[in-house]
Image 1 (cartoon, rainbow, N blue to C red):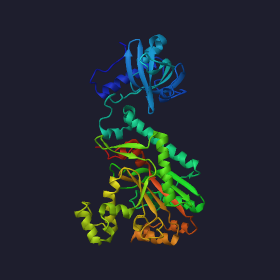
Image 2: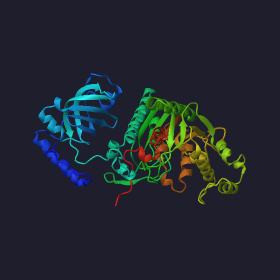
Image 3: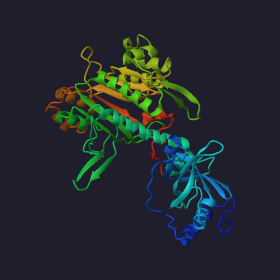
Image 4: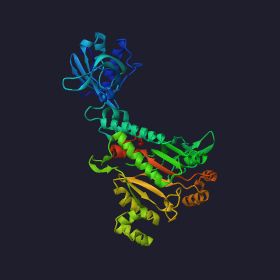
Length: 493
């Protein structure tokens, strides 16, 4: 290897890149394209290891992520985001040209491998390399093998580096893809049809949130990025779709923290003839089915920011169901709803030690107590049913108590994961509820949606589940940024 350029220990990144550029030139001088071409595969690194058979011919590709130079024998790992396999290349098995080419490769380079599987004397499943092809010569070095990217901000900004150096991060994002895949399989197998509704909307409806605003030049009108697809999916119920779902992005121009990203993924499902209880049954079955198929367990450890186990979420069925008011009474006192608004505010602040902003009305005071003392302390799944009517304008009122609505909020891991409704399909009642929510800002009411309801929407159950939060739960990620490949971040500089 005396003719191969090497950077001295402690070299700057610029020097390392310069050395790699020189190697690119040497590869070209050997008559080889350092940026490859077609390479047909029969397996993946992880697939070979998972379904290992000794003496099997395989063709696969991946990145060189570890390299042990033993002179005339080279051991190295070839990896992709799903896993790796050890390979062995010997000088005896190579032509002079191939050996010279190999000496110009290093960690970070992509190669295609042809060879035969075998087991080393130490019992390691491996591939004996018979031929290889350079697919991409990396100009920039990989992150340090043992430390990866220590800077969390850099992991989010340079996700490709995080994925190639952090096995836990790679496993987490593979798991996310499998979770989404199983959600679609579950719904498709039960006759639901997947659809797409507009991302750009005239009126941001379906939830109370601040939208991102833009302007459509061709149509000469202001538009917003959607905050929810709900009103369009209900239009499809009116149009004759009995079982419909959408799994896509929502956008809310609000804060960013450990549990919130302005761009996030939501699944919304609607079923004609259903109600909030049939939706709760479906959520319980769907989530446990996915957990077992992807992870083989119903128990998931949850971690704090220091990496300590906070609690273990147990998804074993059946899941508890309880009325909102009963849960509030459990933490705030049996007489909570018999108190005056002033007494409730005083108890919340002085006895329960829940901070109450002056701008909160009486309903919001109770909601704040619920969020702090029930929701944030709930580890295992809990369906919180029959919340205050004013909080959910798109759900049906409970026939026995019209002050509450027939809904559930599925709470687990200290946060709301999924609301489910008996959907409001009375156009007159719906308009009154939307007017109450809008107050003086009646321009925010989607009158076209109300008119659509007048054509007849069947009674239906509906849910909206935060996919990012579900993935956080099942992977143990303590921040939403650890489960979104490219989260929104502040500009640098």
